[in-house]
Length: 162
Image (cartoon, one colour):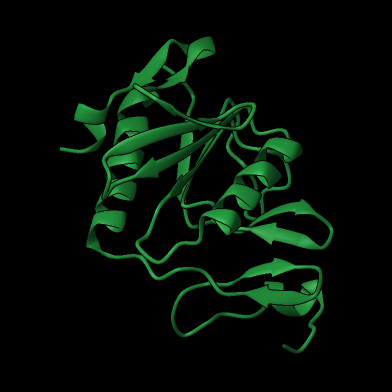
């Protein structure tokens, strides 16, 4: 794989799925299926509905600069209390990865760990095929619901997996 600069990456669009950038190399991402996309849409809709109570700014598939040479793309991110710039360089309140059938768990876990190290307060993994929820506080653990306690927000499987 050919190394490219951060500046080249930031000015490159891809004909299919956007790529992530790790230390000069482009990293392909798993292709989502319908259930993946639907789950992303539901998560964003749930956070958008909460905007009446809280200044929340959800987004999907947005490039974020975790470090100078590391730009990742969470499936869903939620910023609070301020709207981020076009290229966020501060952690969102929540970063969510939605599993695709061809995801490799070692790569997904590494990505979740990167979000935690960056300072994301709530790192979640949602498995729409297995209808399971995971939190990545100190390791990956299956949970009955996804919570943002400081805002008294709780998302349940029945809300996410219609």
